[in-house]
Amino acid sequence: MADYDLLIRGGSVIDGTGADARIADIAVSNGVIVAVGADLEGTADTMVNASGSLVIPGIVDIHAHYDGQATWDSRMHPSSWHGVTTAVMGNCGVGFAPVVASNHDKLIELMEGVEDIPGAALHEGLQWNWSTFGEFLDAVDERPHDIDIAAQVPHGALRLHVMGERGANHEDATADDIAAMAELAREGIEAGALGFTTSRTRNHKTSTGAYTPTLTAAPDELIGIAEGVGAAGSGVLQVVSDFLDVDAEFATLRAMMERSGRPLSISVVRNPMAPDDFRVWLDHISAARADGLELTGQVAARAVGLILGLECTLNPFLTNPVYREIADLPLAEKIAQLRDPDFRARLLTEAGERLKAKLGGNLIGRFDLLFEMADEPDYEPSLEESIAARAARAGVSSEEFALAAMLDNHGVGDGKGLIYLPFLNYVDGTLDGLHEMLSHPFTVPGLGDGGAHVGTICDGSFPTTLLAYWGRDRERGTLPLPYLVQQHCRDTAQTVGLFDRGVLAPGYRADINIVDYDNLRLHKPEIVADLPAGGKRLLQRAEGWAHTFVAGVETYRNGKATGALPGRLIRGAQPAPAPS
Image (tube, rainbow, N blue to C red; front, side, top):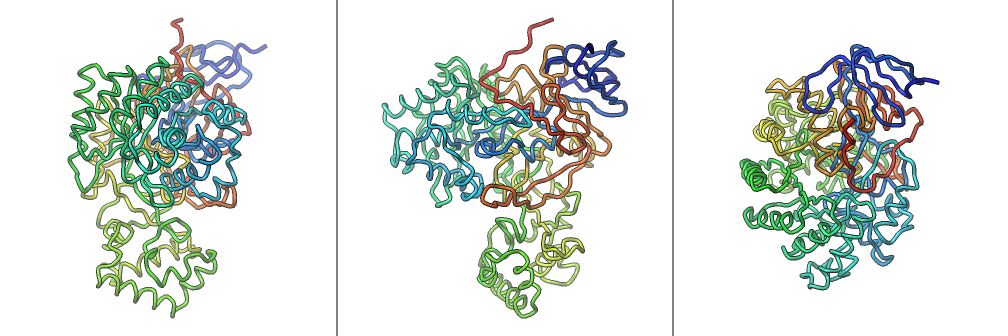
């Protein structure tokens, strides 16, 4: 009989504590790390030579939206291609429980609108074999997965469940409504939810165009529900907000933490329309920490940007009435029309007329912020490489250049060319503000939205960007690799109450990545029609993730699935291993 289930030999170990890399072996038994050290003795059922490779803990992604996908799919792509071994869903106040049958469509409309997940895929994929939050967790738990999954109680579902149309119409909750929502939140935590989440941003709308039901929830509603979480003695709080009244909003966040005794995290981004506001938010976070409140900022690994293309939800011609004549055609027919000289001339003439009339002046028409995506995407592109700048150098209109970029696709000619529109965090052509956010002592990486925005955004690949770009490639300033590993492994895990993972040390879960760090890089996203009802989504692969282990079982080898599905549902906060 072997001494261990798994023995990883001779890797450059960055253990997640912030310590520098060291050459060490890692031994695993029964899904737990049992020894880390140089030249460990013993045999193992599986031996891996990690010499020359980086060995790090599994990535803990605390901001995902796999609430639907986890019920019908065992593989949490794209996240599990990027070293993620734990994902937390139910963010931003959207999800599918608790629910009554009459609200099924409303919750689908909410998820479809807020997170850009095709309604047809949700209608076909969701089995609705649950009503309570606990039953939803059971439904997720029935299916094996390639990573561990945790869930949170969504405010949108609570409000619709308790208040019905009054909740959807943004009416104020009564004291009885608040008490009922607080009780449901407590029950959800006791059933195994990691926390409670809500959205207070006007960017979140249902597929019918209505604002999310939670947008205008009054402070007493948010505080009351937070108290319900606190009554469970566990759980975290997550909020996304526009912070239109910064002082009032942070006063509410403080009250939620003070009255519940629970930690809270918020989304922090740099808006080019108010480029210095993020520093005010960070100052509020620091002040709360100084007062003993566990307030944490979740920040991105790159710009929050849109991807445009002929198969995507958006493209630069979406509002052009000539393009709308062919918008619903299959791709091959669409390409044929766009290559037809007469149709193309009409399309570009209309685009020119709309430009003169200053129509369609929205983000997808900002050619000075649109960039053609190469096979290895540049996520901090120079403004000199924008489509507007390149078109000017080529002596053609921006619209013509953009159309050619989508149709030609770097000479392939398949109509699958993609255009990148970096927006949040990308100011004056740089991500310098994001460097400040990532360096802040009270922020952690998040906001990857794995499983969401499937036709417009593909940010589940954030972990690869964080390690490869911020740790190695960025010419304007990198960050220490041990710090980045600590941030996206141990610190993210602890932010949501998971103290049993994110560190390579005896007693911790054996969630481990072996990385060919010198060759770690991203490929361009691609559209794949693999959702229920033939729904399409953007997926993005990477190179360099040599081996990924979940609970000591190898799930991916060089980006290919091994067939093993050791992932499980995480029920509630997890304590740190007992000292050995």
